[in-house]
Amino acid sequence: MDVVLKLVRELGELRPNIPQLLFSESVWFGTSLKLRKEIIKHREKFPNNTEIDFVLNSPGGMPGDAYRIIRGLRTNFETVNIIVPFWAKSAATLLSLGASQLIVNDWAEFGPIDIQVPKEKRDSPRYDYESALNDEFSLKLIESRAQELYKKMFVDFHQSDSIPIERNELSSQLMGYLPNFYKPLLEQLNPYKLGEKKRSLEISVKYAKRILAQYNSLTAEEATSLTDFLIHECPDHGYNVDYALLQLFLPNIQLAKKISAEYDAKLDELSLHFMEAKEAENHIGFVYGAKPAASPRAAPPIAPVVTASTVSADEVSDGQKDGEGSKPSQTHKEHARASH
Image 1 (tube, one colour):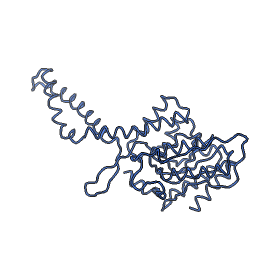
Image 2 (spheres, one colour):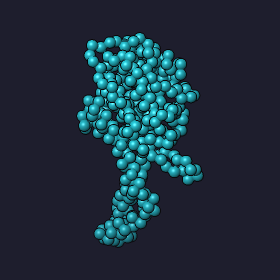
Image 3 (cartoon, helix red, strand yellow):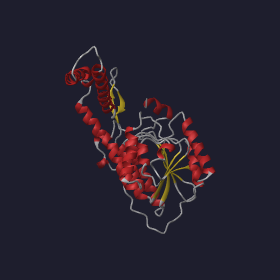
Image 4 (cartoon, helix red, strand yellow):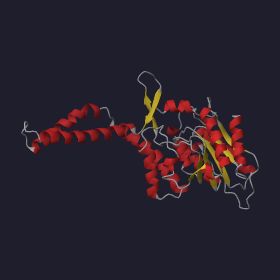
């Protein structure tokens, strides 16, 4: 961890008077609570500080806590630059949408924001996780294949000289045949589970639109386009959404090289370190170098990032209770295995 702190401190030296707040962790209740405490301590020391660089390295986590984190940051600081040296996946992508400026290097990696739901293992009492989109995608695939099969069979039979049959009769027979053909597949889909997963998926959709409406300059149509892409256009939860894709939607994302070549090189060092890490490099807190510049304006009131009363039971997984220690983040290799 000493190497990470050193590199973040050196990044701060290239950004005079802008404090560096490092968040290298999963996004959940315990880590959002830890971040809240760090913000409070910082504001007590530097009440006039209005701008920070939030250095983010995270495999993701809970969407509700992602919203609480970005809300707390934007409430306490007028300008929140989110710096992504390597990855900000899933819920970390969600909170990145609320940045004043999103600063990345060529290796920065974001990802889809579809909710992951528990799935029972057949050979184990434990659970795997799958996208809440899976059942919906399966149903749409069956519908599409049924339509294609109907058209093909109708054309083939109608144009055949060896099978004389009227169009209405042919259509009637096909409409009776296709439901029975796909019945075994349709019976595996639980309508109640479809609705439940749809509601779960709406959590990320609503938070994304809320964050973009409150903290970004996108129109409602542009926000819907970005949200739809991050939910429906990514084929897998581990899908790599990089600068080349996000810059098509976000006007406030920029490459580190635009700050300076020296800053870009230093961010590359940090990125490479995170990629090569064999163990999770977990840390939440300000990394101080030079003191932040004083501002003549009064600081905005401190707002909580998260409170126990606002956390619903379904947003907190087993072991994520108030007062418990930080849940370790996944390394790059662990997340890659979990995403496929």
